[in-house]
Each structure stands twice: as structure tokens, then as C-alpha cells.
Image (cartoon, rainbow, N blue to C red; front, top):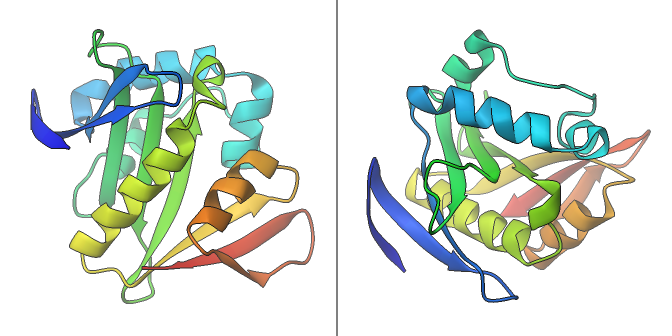
Length: 171
């Protein structure tokens, strides 16, 4: 259930193992903890998220992601350590009216605990509130965990050629 957080409304998420987390809108000052998240993620996790082994975001990239005019970026922390970002979720605007773009990065030790699924569901709710009727996601065919998460949201492939899938999630 959403509640008031440090930087606006926050959403509490309890994972399958009982761990409590909080998800809130990102702010420009979150760049340093987001960089730390990237450093803690394995090369494999970063490669699946970015389709490359991106080790960090540039200040310009973070400015784009944290700019509300470009979309919504959410950060997730353990409930007891609100300065320690363990996941980043992006619901960005696209050039197609009503279609947002979804991307999620979860720190390796927090994977396979239900966080990705909960964040995707929360991102869908955020996208609906922002007026989107569909989310798009580009996912590597080798990213089985994310494909499983998106299947739960009724994602369908619109282009399945090559090493990535272009998926659409109806809202």
C-alpha cells in the first residue's frame, strides 16, 4: 500500500521471503546511490538490462531518466535502509502516443525474490496513471527471468527476430 515517503509517495513491497522494500520516485540527488547499484550488479545483469555491460550512467543519462518530463524513474530500497538503492525501474515516454517504455534493473542478491514482478506490476499502475495504454519493453531472448515477469503482465512479442524481443504489455 502506498504511503508518504521522503521524496513523495512511496510504495511498500513485501517480497516472497518476507523482506520489506520501499519504492519511490527518483530524484536528481539519487545519482550516486544509483551508480553504486550499477557497481554491485554483475556484468550479466547490466548486460541484460542495457543490452550492453554498462557499468554506470553518465550524469546526462541520469538527467534524462530523472526528468519528469521524460517519464518516471523509480528507485527501490530495503525498508530499513532508504539510502541503499537495490533496484531502478523506468517508465519512460516514447514518440508513440500512449505507449511508455519499461525497463528494470534489480541488484543480483535481490533477484528471484518477487521484486521484479512487483516492480513491473507497480510500473504498469504508474503508466496507467500517466495516461499510457501500453508499455513497450525490449528484452534479450536470454533474459528468461524478465520474460517470465512480463508474461505475467500478458506481454506479447511484436518483433522476435535477432537476439532481442520487442514486447508490448496492454494496460
